[in-house]
Length: 95
Image 1: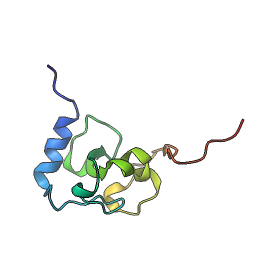
Image 2: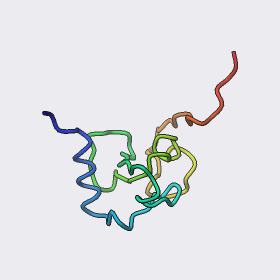
Image 3: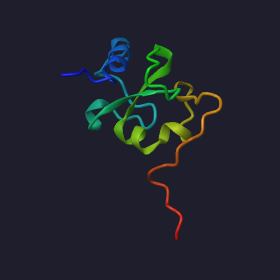
Image 4: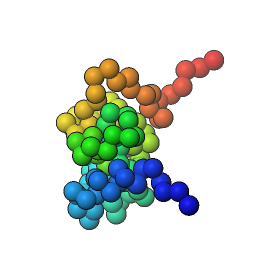
């Protein structure tokens, strides 16, 4: 059985943070208020598990793309040259 490649980032991040008190910087949800916390790589490189490159977001903020444009938080600052993804909740253009 192979190890989940994302586990290294999780290990690094949660080693430094209290899993019981941590809240999502995007919406403020605690671990008890969400189905999952995702460890996000700020620079988009899943191999860069440097502590300063990792932030945990609730599943809704992470999958919804809120980390790309909506939150004013220095932990979520986008690297230069970053092109935001469109939000999954954004209306799609018509035909």
